[in-house]
Image 1: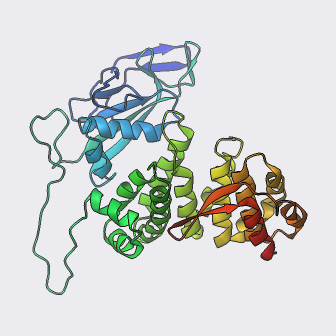
Image 2: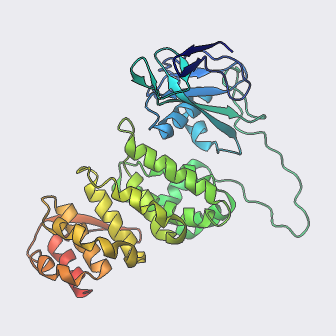
Image 3: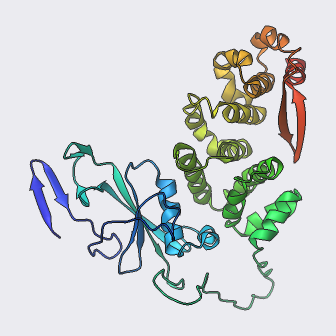
Length: 362
């Protein structure tokens, strides 16, 4: 490997972490990616995406997956880490000079870039191959006597239809056998239809609790992708906060530790309505997690955005914040309306109605 030493910095040409061969500088591939990040491919079949900031690894993973699938978004969403592909990272990458810098600075630039690599497992066609693409190397061994045969995996359209019909039991039965339902449900949390989106996040939270019983790592990776989509301004975070809230509220014991990361997003005014709605959702399952924050939330009962006022009132009722009684009473005549979701249904309520319900709980 070519290596240079400048002062205390060691500069290296980047190599593929899978095969050790030198790689080319990543470039734009607008027809085969989301066009958010430059990408590249190694001769061994690995592909990589360049996150120049090192903070948008969720997008980098998505870019690499789509590139490896020749722009086939649906196929990319079907792939599962560890089962269908392997992941590796090359850190301290400087995109301008195409170097890995064993230090924090290079030519006055911070070296926080990451090359995010994935490599499809054997049995999946590599991106440079031509002809129809295989999605899996399927094997169908005969079932052993007395063992229930695994059900055929439902299509994405079938999953979407079940979500739209709010068939929770059937979807959870699928989740018990196939963790890949996470991907199908995650696609739906970005729906432009409010009811579909909220049903999807609701069911995703319940399915994640089921999957965490046998593969908690799959849910952890999902949480990482969701937070990355929120922090990455180039990607849509629509539905991500609700999905995180539903995952936490359905499994507080395992995922309650993510709550401080949600608190850290509260300085973003655009995210505040979604955040407060989900704080209320989590508080209904575990009031003790939010009760110590009561005094920080009381001022939100006077916030200019009616959604924030409404969800803050709901939160006060969930944690039993008697000290907010006077502020809640001041909202009883608030006629502004918001859309609320519960158990698969949407309901339009006034802020005053929500405040009244909160007061009934104090």
